[in-house]
Amino acid sequence: MILDDFLVRAALAGVGVAFSAAPLGCFVVWRRMAYFGDATAHAAILGVALSLVLSTSIFAGVLVIAMVMATLVSLLSGRGYAMDTLLGVLAHSALAFGLVAVSFVSGVRIDLMAYLFGDILAVGKSDLVLIWFGVVFVLGLMRWRWSNLLMATLNTDLAYACGIDPRREQLVLNLALAVVVAVAIKVVGVLLIAALLIIPAAAARTFSRTPEVMALLAAVTGALATIGGLQAAYWLDTPTGPTIVSLATILFMSSGFVGLTRRRLSRGMSPPGRGSG
Amino acid sequence: MKLLRIEHLDVVRGDHLILQDVHLVLERGEIVTIVGPNGSGKTTLLKTIVGALGPTRGMIEMPRGLTIGYVPQRLHLDATLPLTVARFMNLPRRHSSHHVDRALKRAGSEGLIHRQMSDLSGGQLQRVLLARAVLESPDLLILDEPTQGLDQWGIADFYRQLDSVRHELGCGVLMVSHELHVVMRTSDRVICLNRTICCEGTPERVASSPAYLAMFGHDTEEALALYRHDHASSTAPLGPLS
Image (cartoon, rainbow over all chains, first blue to last red; front, side, top):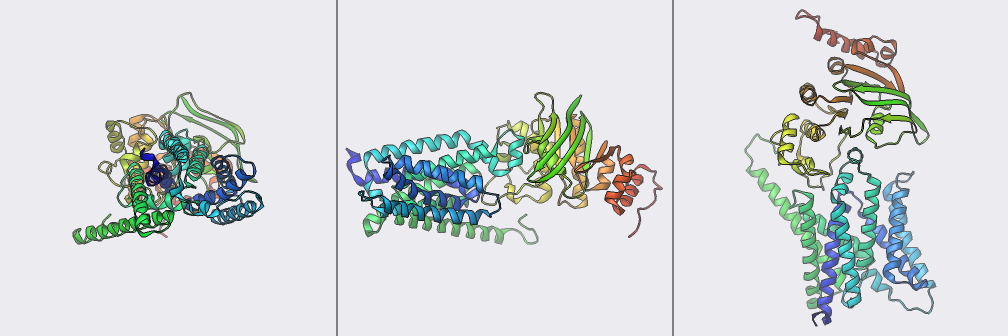
């Protein structure tokens, strides 16, 4: 069967994560919560430790802790500390507490590197099922709440005036973020999840005129980076997760270059004495 | 027909009592303007009416099914969010292109439909916001300093547009404004707010009330001069030279 090939499983897992990360990554970029994604992802190590102690599934442990973390950040924001300070404290302390907690787990050998950097080549069939359940859930959730999320992102007062509660939409985003972190931890690992959220979305910005196009292009960019990165890692014998992120970054830089050139060209071509508006 | 009735409204934010015992009634077809110094609770009052803030005490009553069009004080557009005017008009609900075109025309912003929101000038953005607010033919328009950042031509233009919209829709208008001379000319009623309502009534009555004079001092003379100028014949006196 085709799924017996570890490279095919890896590609399917990576593409799945790229698809679910794309629309969410766009919101992370629009709402300027890049470090929010970071903090949630770093907390996942604590989730791994807890699920080992309680011998529950890693997915459940990571999901719960990521959700708790995201909610904690939402609750604490705007209470005397600047958001970036708060996230800096929470992200790194969650990682530190997680690493300390892992060291207390005796009798179980865990490959910490696999959680920090991911091991996409070790994705099994059951992992694949879990990842795609997560993907379908996140994409369904985003599609259902899309307009409300956009409105809440644009302006909270306007959202309230339309009968949308921005706090509820924030909760929806937190939940989606927790699911993406939980499914992506095996693929790219805790340290690179934020990269997979942000870089494709940032690369898609140049070519997008509407939010929907940006989410779609981010998904395409993410999938390209995943498949290309897998291939490149195979040829060059490099670590897979970091290779995927590196390729995504190359795509981002190319997109930035094209955007810059286009802007310069259009400025050069506009008739003299007329501003670009 | 009453569009809005507020009684005994208190709003507390943190440790601060921002609004205290506010009463307000707004009828259909009326333009009511709220004036007051910075930090007097004007924006808080509007936000409480649209439901963005909860009242601490008191009640806000609106007829069932009343539609509100709202123009917030400031729309910060993040450049990372690509958004055309057309897409913005269809948020959060889709509308037929006929409806969208009509709303844009009403607000005097035809031809902007394919532009990016972040590329609009201040005046264009305000008009697009007004267009979005009138999209669902609201019964009540709530505007928070809609002419902020516009030059005097832009301001005059905006109020002309607002007036025609009001006549077309027959809606009530509640707004906050700092342009005292325009306020005096365009409003049916003026409410002077400083945590609580200090005085209210027709523009002329408010402008001559001691509470208002104490609050706005020398600005008042100018506003009054312009106001009288508007209503007098062509031989009206010039405003005071500074």
